[in-house]
Image (cartoon, one colour):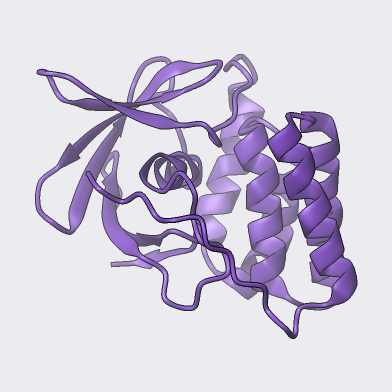
Length: 202
């Protein structure tokens, strides 16, 4: 499953200086392992993008916060509020609903998600949670994914965050020509997932 993209982030010359500064500071904190500062930074960057009506940038900032803590309600609530501008309203509402119903899941992130393959198949592992998703590539363009216990009620949006990080360790978040793959998760209709973390119906 060769979806490893080279680390090559292109800055957008028209990006607001404050938004760019907040985003870079949050990313630097995440790389240092300062999770609390990184979470706050990504949320602040997302709020800045909302104020500028840069909805896609806001969504990516809030998703970056979620990648650090997939059980964090604050960025999910913000994604629900801007969903009418970015699409995927149902997916983010379902995510928020699951967090309300299942508070007992372990807190874990997916920035270090990795694919582990053996004779039986492939799984995605996340630090703090272990094996979370079973993967199978049924064609050159389609990845089938299924949640593992105790995450059988994992919402689609959470799964796509995890699968994206597992497939692209160093995603090119600002590329205008992102790599993409079709993902069918847990009985949902397949979607096109790209390395920036955006998805759309297949």
